[in-house]
Image 1 (cartoon, rainbow, N blue to C red):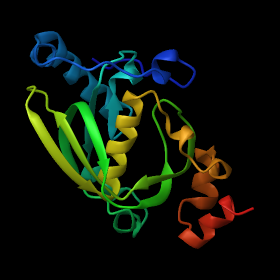
Image 2 (image 1 turned 180 degrees about the horizontal axis):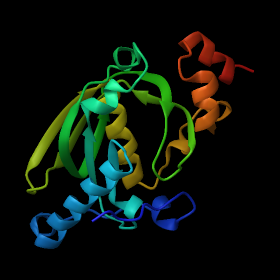
Image 3 (image 1 turned 45 degrees about the horizontal axis):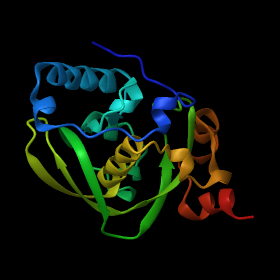
Image 4 (image 1 turned 90 degrees about the vertical axis):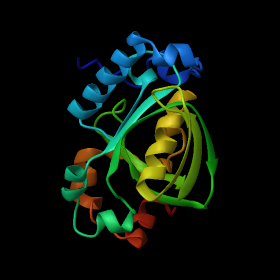
Length: 194
C-alpha cells in the first residue's frame, strides 16, 4: 500500500526516532510496514524512505537505487557522482561513520517536494545497523550510495537536508532543470560564492 509522505513542517520529521528491538523488527506488522515503505518509495519515485517520512518515529529506512533511474541522468552525471545501482535493502538502528572528506552535489527530498540544494556529504561511509531480520550488518558505501545512506540516517535523527545545505544554492526543481542540471563544479561555485 502506498502511504502518504509527510512534508517539512510536520513535527515527526524534526524529532529523533526511537530504536527498534529485534522482536519488533521481525514482527508481521513491521514486515508489512517495510513492504509498504518500499512500495511508497518506488511510487514517489525515490531512492530512500525513512519511517519518519510516513509519520512513524522509528529508526527504520528502506533504500534502493534502480538502474533505470541512473539511465535517465544526463551523460556523465552518474560517473561524476559515483552512482551505481543499489539493491533494495533495509537499515534499522543505524550508526554512521564518515570515512572520507565531504563532496558537494545537489540533493532533494520526498519531504521537500519541488526543491533542491547543494549538500556537502562524506564521499564514503560505514554504517553499522540491523537488517529486516534483525541481524547485524555493516555497510561500506561510497559515492551516491553513501549520500543516500547519510540522507536517510539524517531523517532518523530529525535532520533534513536543508539543515546541511549550502543555503545560497537552494532553488526550485524547475530552475535547477533550466539552469544548473548540467553545470560543472566551477559553475556551481557561482551559486555559493559571495
